[in-house]
Image (cartoon, rainbow, N blue to C red; front, side):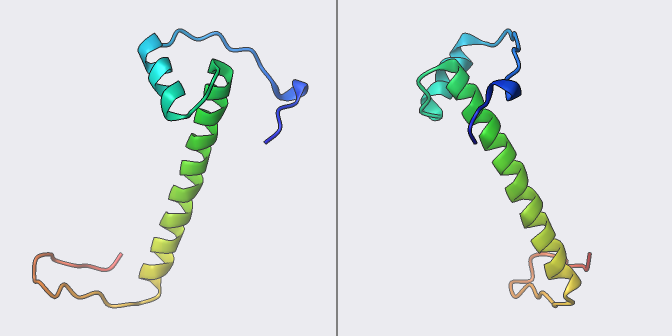
Length: 79
């Protein structure tokens, strides 16, 4: 997503320097602002994946499918 001047807000945070260094490395970011953007994008993307996965799980169980534990290890129930 392109960053425009009207969307930028200044935030002053006290953050552990070691965590910043590790996050920059993990996110392959050259600067702290770039790291912040990538981290926020990652959190938003993860939330979307989680919501889509949960919706798919709900559709799966609502479809009426029967699940059997062929190994007899778990007690299964309908949601």
